[in-house]
Length: 215
Image 1 (tube, rainbow, N blue to C red):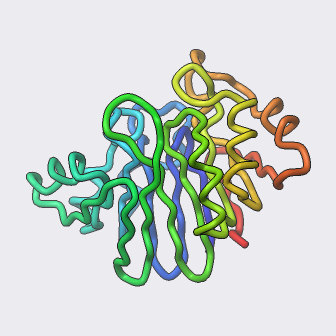
Image 2 (tube, rainbow, N blue to C red; image 1 turned 135 degrees about the vertical axis):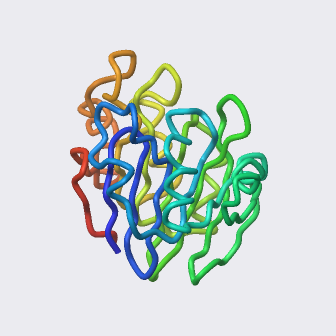
């Protein structure tokens, strides 16, 4: 299974199914692809409906026939536009097309979540936009997280110090920093995050468009 960072919080996962998370591409100065370049897709996962996460989700889903997996409030809007949906809420899990999605807590404004995706024997945790939650410490009891996508930009999400603690709590083997460097208002570098994580996990600082093999 491959994971590719597309800039900001947008993440592409490719394995037996293809999954796009928080596809803010149009208007994203760091976007590695244009929406029209995405032509084959099974799922669009949305952690919440803020513009820098919802982004091009509905247009991409309509064009590709992908199913939107998200909070009930978000999928309700997608369904009005004729998009196939899988509504969820925090604490729930579903299996669709052989992929298990588990929605976990996040703390931010509006309905918001994190998402844990299990596919092809690998587990990816996209934290969405969140502050540090002690609940993250319970996740290793239920999931063996191979890769965590961790917001580190500060101001609107965790900064480097709390993001590093989140990595330790959730037990991820590898951490990929996201939600930083997109705009001047966000922290521009992942250096402090790398330093604070230390030896508790492997940190892969990806360039927009760069990918890693999960596992």
